[in-house]
Amino acid sequence: MKNQSLQQKLKNAWNGILFTYKTENNFRFHCYSGIATVIVFGLLQISLVWWGLIFICIGLVIAAELANTAIETLLDHIHPQRHPAIGKVKDIMAGVVLSLSLLALIIACLAIIDRLY
Image (tube, rainbow, N blue to C red; front, side, top):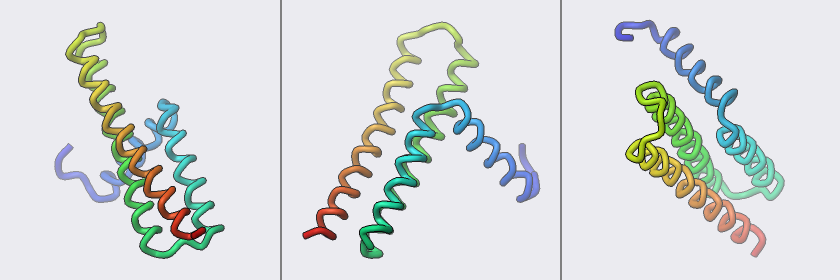
């Protein structure tokens, strides 16, 4: 809704994140993977540049999962039956999340390799 207070907008955003956390296994997996990565980076004392890159990657994966959930929820509401075009949109969004997840994994591996060698 338009003209809401900042406090209400933040509450709505937080509710969206909580909804996604409660309903989407992949979102929870990515949250826990991000936390595990932060712990490993902390133990290995990774340089600040790698920290910046991995936080960007974690943020992108989380944002993509949120967008994926939003689109899937909307499409399921508008057209509850199976439809090839809707299936393609869902597959494309899953591909977005997968590609960003692979990017995050590559960045994390490069950071670890850089630290160890």
